[in-house]
Structure formats: C-alpha cells, structure tokens
Amino acid sequence: MRSAVRPGNHSMRIAFDYQTFCNQTYGGISRYFVRLAEQLAAAQQDARIFAPLHQNRYAGDLPPGIVQGFGLPRYPPRSTPLFLALNRAVARRAIGNWRPDIVHETYYSPYPSGPASGRTVITVYDMIHERFKDNFPPGDPTTEIKRMAISRADHVICISQNTRHDLIDLFGTPEEKVSWIHLGFDHFPSREDARVSNTAGDRPYLLYVGGRFGYKNFARFLQSVAASPDLKRDFDVVAFGGGRFSAAQRALIKQLGFRNFQVRQVSGDDSLLGFFYEQARAFVYPSLYEGFGIPPLEAMAYNCPVVSSNTSAMPEVIGDAAEYFDPGNTEDMARAIRSVVYSEERLSQLKALGRERIRQFSWRRCAEETLAVYESLLQQGPRQP
Image 1 (cartoon, helix red, strand yellow):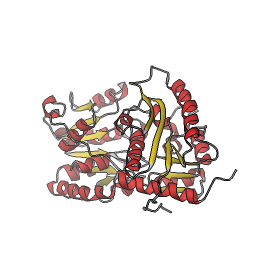
Image 2 (image 1 turned 30 degrees about the vertical axis):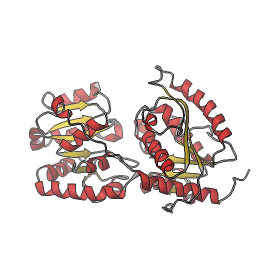
Image 3 (image 1 turned 45 degrees about the horizontal axis):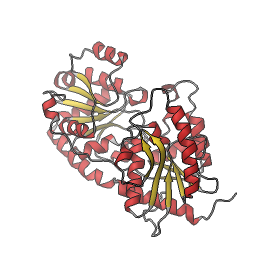
Image 4 (image 1 turned 45 degrees about the vertical axis):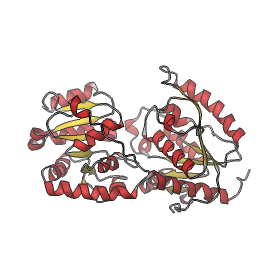
C-alpha cells in the first residue's frame, strides 16, 4: 500500500547518511535528499545529514545545522573510495552518538550507517542494473550490494509504482515492506543572458537532457530525426548535460549526415537549463527505462511540450501530458515528434496538460508521505534483537 499523507504531530530525529553526498557533486539523488531534509526541517522535524567530508554542492544551500560536516570543492582524482571509507567510519559514530529515531540510507552499502537497534529506511530509485545488465561492466557489484542494503532495511521507499513492482518482481522483497512515493521537482529561474551567449542558435531545436549511454537511447533518437527528412531539415538537436560527446557519438552524428553544429552538446547550471526548456520546440525523452523521470516535469514547468517513450515509469509520472512513442521503433519516435512540432494545436494542448500535470508533484508532498513512513515504523516499537 502507498503510505498515508498525514505526518504526525511530534518531532523526531531523522539521520540521512553520507553516501550520496560523497558520490555526487550534483545529481538527482543528492537533490532529492537535500529537498527532503529542507522540507522536514520546515515541518519542525530534526533532520540532519551526516556527511563529514562531502563534495556535494546542493548541501551548501541548506540552513545551518542540517549538514553535519564540511564541503570540499571536489575530491582528488581516484580518492573517492578513501573518502567513502573515512566518511563511513566518522558518520556511523556520529549517528550512533546522536541516537536518531530513523536512519535513512541514501544509497546502497554493505555496511549499516546507524546503530543496530535503530530503524532504517532506504530508497530504491530504479532497477536499471538488473533490467539492463549489459549496460554495466561485468562483475559490477551494485545488484548484490543493493540486495544486502534492502534486506537490512526495515522499510523500502520506491520512487514510483513501477519501480516498486520491479523490485518485488526481481528481488522478491515482501510487498508490505515496500511503499512508493513520487518525487517532487524544481522550477529554477531561467537565464536571460543565455540569449546573448548564442548557445541555443537561431534555428528551432529539439531538446534532450542528461546522460546519453545505453538505455538512455540517445543514438536511436538521433537516428529517428536523421531518418525523417522534414525533421532533419527543420530542426537542430541540443543535448544538455551528460558531458561532451564521445568519439562514438561524434562519429554517429557525422555518419547520419547532420550539418556542422546541427547536433550540439551544452553544459551549464540549472538556470541555463531553464532557458533551454523555455526555448525548445519540444523536449524528447527517448529512454528505455526510468525509475521516475524528473526532466519531463521540469519541461512542463517551463511550458515545454513533452514527447516521451511509453515504457516503465514514464506514463505513470507524465500521465496524458505527452505524445508517446515506442522507444525501440525509430519510425514511431519520428511520428510522435512530427505530430507535435508541426501542429500548433497539439503544442498548445500539451503545454496546457503539462501545466495541470505538474500540480500533482511537489517536494512538500514527497516529504509528508516520507514522514508518514517514518511514523508508521516508530509505531511498531523498538526493533527486536
């Protein structure tokens, strides 16, 4: 069952561990926990992040007292395992001394972050490592470590019904141990000065956001545009974030016959991303699998029409506010894009549906439902030895 939406009236001590704040400088998981901590603190809960020496940028935006630790600009090359071990040792002692009601582990570790007597919650974001094993190096330990962390936890929160279903199906986790709680999303101000930087160019463009490897299906997206003479003639492709194009991606762009700079990669902060959402003809989300999918919600917040694959959590999150396609079919992808970008009526309709859809998602609601999970655990009394 889904957790109730009513938080209790008493304050509790909630500890978030170091993991995601040491692993991510920026990223969706660390943003999620920063927003949770922020909202829980606003609801008069004593929420703290125990990350003694972290490298996360979002953590620096929190009010004083929430982050127990210091931020470094970035760890030296190849030193992350060392810093993780150091943080684990120091944070576990600090959490034990603080004696929280709940320890919420922020990623998967073979080692517990809190005392054995305490209640532990963990969030599962997706089952990509299990569904798409070929996208990861042989011997990648993520699945086994994830199993250990989930087995150790008193309760598991999944970020979508689809992820909950996959977890139960693939790991056999008891249904009563698993809730689903949707994430919120951020609406960041866009940068007017981006107009002058000319990074968007003068031609209309299709926007792609985030990583481009494997299951993200970026190559098939490019193939669908290249195979459609009108799309290839009339639109550029802007890939925001995800790092520079790899040699293989540059070779594919050339092989598909795109003009110079017709497909380009842009990096920048959230405000620059906001500008690109605002100016795009459409946002295209071709992924084969997502545990949730925040970029479509961000696009909707900027009045940007969404064209999305129809798999995993996408229909659950996006609802009727997108034109859908089969991500394994380039013809269907091109059809969906064309049906939006060449129709003013469909563009207007999707913008309106998007504005309505995003009203269902907020970090406040996410925090309220998470707090209800914590409360239900505490009502079960102390953990049995």
